[in-house]
Length: 169
Image (cartoon, rainbow, N blue to C red):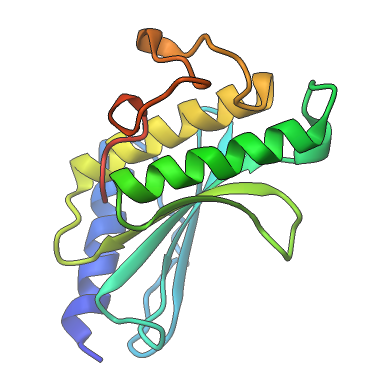
């Protein structure tokens, strides 16, 4: 495991907080050889930035809390979960490492983006966070079942090139 990767994750988190004009908790540290987690909120949406050198010291993850699937204002949860799987297929074709899923620990829907730590730029991460926050807010309002997303890209007929969550971290 490389100390440079730990330093890279810490530097990325510091740069992210600076670009978002947020204050990083004073007790937040990244210790060599240990997993690190940074929790933040953007536009009312919870995020976790995760780094675990024991899983893969070259990779990091961004996890966006979409919300509780049971709280969606839709008549049939099955339709939402089917749509989630369809979008997952499109995301798989479009972007390596992006998935929509249900967190088995919390039961909440999440969007997870896996990224190469050496290639991640703070500005791209900010864009990904903002796009994921937009997706989460859309999920909470419509369960991804409506056809009225920004820029006119309907979710029912979305092609992989139309998806808003296009930034890679």
